Amino acid sequence: MRLPWSKVYRAFPELDEFDDDQCERFVRWAWSKVWLRMVVLPVAGGIAWVVAVHLVLSILPATLPGLPPGIGGANLVALLIVVLSLASSVAVGFFIRDSLLIRAIRDRVRSARCLECRFSLLGLPICEGAVAYPECGTALALDELGLTARDLMVEED
Image 1 (cartoon, rainbow, N blue to C red):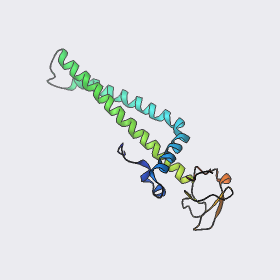
Image 2 (cartoon, rainbow, N blue to C red):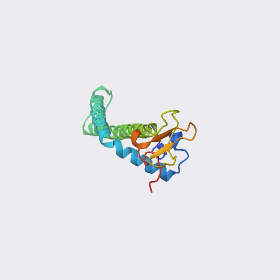
Image 3 (cartoon, rainbow, N blue to C red):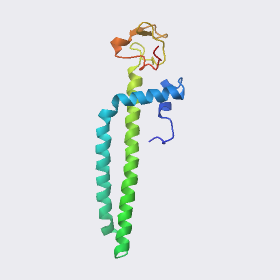
């Protein structure tokens, strides 16, 4: 799991040549392409996690020896259950979101590769709807690949 303040796009060497602003736009765009189909899984996973943690922690008071009798002990255990359920749900939610975000970026980066040599086409200039990879000389029509200038992180004029 990445740290919340780290830049997820820096995990992809193909994006190293671009500045932070370009990479952040690319990440937002990549996420916008896939977020809808990826929302059901995190929500279902988060709900399942909350239920599982709640069930485990609701059994906990019966297994703890020496728990103070009366209202005080029950309140303490109830508070513990709520805090651990919320904290673990947030952590799982961030983990699932980051996993899906990395997957979305990886899919976008993989789709923008030369068909011959498999090197990245990101940032290469587009001429008449095609891009030529300078290493192998292969000219690829963007329409045939199902790509746009935005897929290649090239500003459209």
